[in-house]
Length: 453
Image 1: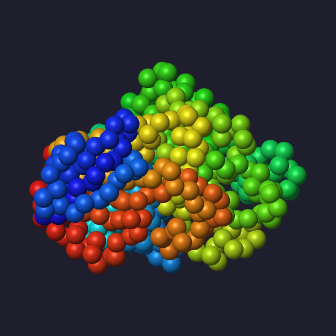
Image 2 (image 1 turned 135 degrees about the vertical axis):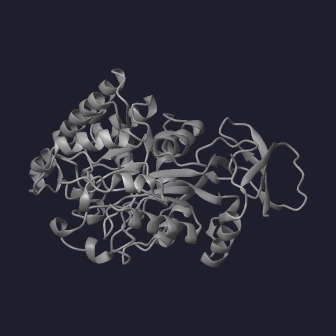
Image 3 (image 1 turned 180 degrees about the vertical axis):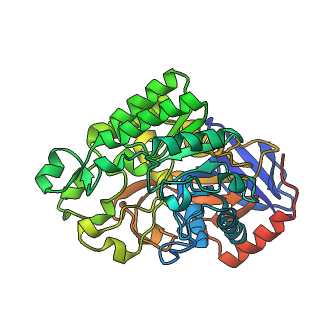
């Protein structure tokens, strides 16, 4: 059984403590803890957070391993301080059967860097016409509890209603990619003055807001749980705020990039050339007033969590003319630093709030057992050590996945993840990933140990 003693970490309430990990459990939290038999980790100046949980990750495997694999995506997650990720269903084959979700979960277990929880597709093949094998995935070894056609909207209201009714029966949640497809045909960026100036087809805010409005009403009618993926507009915030005021069971996420980046980057700023496809994403980067509204909504709880929408692509899919480029950005490695810059430094959130929006709330929404718990004796040994005083210019060297389509390359970012512990063993130490063989061996040993209650 491995044991680690983390010395002098700052907890999210501002106090300092030692944290002793033994096997898969936090054995003790306090001062002057016994170091016998433990590896010492100096955490002076570091914040201890419960391991981060991402509710929205694209791992690409099976079918697009040239962009990412479960192993490479898990490594990227660990570098970013994550101990659990939820893998979206738009792989090839689509994760719409028990066999595929069980495969994805098994690959995550073998890799050992993070807990990988598969998300099942709502519709067969993501085509939006017939329901997938929702029941079979829910009762499979993967025990899927979140279902989404992310990348595509469940635009048929009848299919959406039936899906909500289905998942209600076992306490599942339906995560909607809110995009009315008929309003976004050929869309290339946020609709507004800038899209007109650049001659790019606009992506109207109402295409997102109309679907959210429809779906919160459907969720209310059915009495089911709805989660809204990657909210991007001020109008969407108001719809969600209204729904919550009515007691509708809806939760929502915002991505790190929608908290900091705006459509102006597409035109080029500070001497940078325009039409850089690193900034092409679905939903698109919006206006400054949308960014401000999203930050405020995260601060007041209208938006529940931050989720990365980590979307790796090959250089060929991104290094091309804007209309032909794929949508998506990688975000696992940079998420905590971006949240730090966007909402902690301006004073909108404190570190306890960060633990909520990046750990406890996503674990609760996604029903990710053994994650998101406060750092306390008896809790699962899932935690992250973060240096808030560090500064860096984000670079390719900071990326641990297979793809490099990060919008933050060359940007100054605060903080860095110093260590990540998953199931009591380190996946990152002194800011460096442990090698795959060592982590896989730790994972095998951890599976034989008793799981904490």
